[in-house]
Image (tube, rainbow, N blue to C red):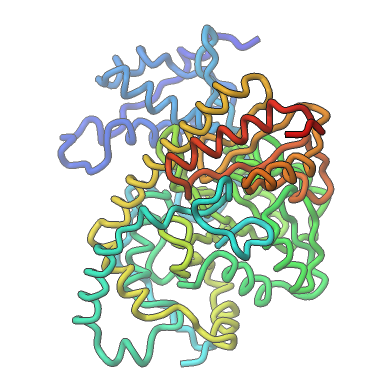
Length: 507
């Protein structure tokens, strides 16, 4: 049983940003409290299992409203830094490895303030001067319940056209004929600024390589970093394209189970020879689990001890419906072992074909050499238009719009299911992303349920079809982002009928 005496031992100095004129700081007081507490936990100023001051106590101590502290504590809880139990208080649950504190690099406490604008210049002398469902051909918006697909109807074509016209007026012949192999500096600058501000990643323009999407990044990394026979650990269940890409590169693919906290990092100790680990920590594909902070630190510690690499696929991190999007795994990386991959094809529209990777310096030259050899395929005009669009603030506005729309569609879907098929299912992973997992009743035949759904005009993917070694309960993946509200309502009613209808009963 935890002891409440630990609360009085926690003396947290008020952050300087709260003592200064708040007008001098762009971030909110809630963000300041969250950052101060997070950095204290990561720096072990507040050890694991310590009881934190109550929100009332901390609010009085720091001169804040209790609501501000409550919101910061809720965010820390959502990101698994703390656990909150009514009647027992708030306790630190993140376990920070010893090696994390000894890792080289910028201390976490300095990362919020360090927002470098000027890119450090590296000479690359060795370089020449729809994540859809399995079987994604034919996947389209408007068909319930295709997963992992954004709604193209929410994208503002007039706004995009204006920025494209502006880019055409400003472009010069040098840009058209000799684009930087890493991507246009204008776009890389905007991407780096976004990652610093919204994903908590300290990076510069020079760290970014523009690609066509996450699968393109995986393919280039597999062919430039891996050797035939190298071991690669992937989540189980996993995004199937990643497993295929690594296997086609000659790697030995090792499935590692996933639970409610994400990848079971303790299993990695059985594979110290693994060259690379591929994870989707923000919203695990396909289970929807969010990797806890303890697991994230364990994963980085494993990579640091074994000289391995981590690919962070951050494909739908922008869409969190409970609070602000979680900070990226890369934001905790003091050792430079995480390769961060992102894509605009999910946040904007599938046909854009623009993504990026944040590549450690020692891997950049091999990757760019492979990129040059295979041919650069990201168009200059797409890059110029996207850079202008982001600089104008349209990207953040689009994320706000789509996040509200997707949340409303999710809420409608869950409400219809709850009203028409109570007790016939459970859901998980609904807090974020484009889909959730719908768990069928015990003893259900997953494949048969998907077949019945297809006959009714619904596209469902069985969770077991994405598993390698693990054996999970019967479940299906339900996507909702690329549907109108009417399509959500109609599809949800059909789905509810299938859930209520006994197996094998004729319609």
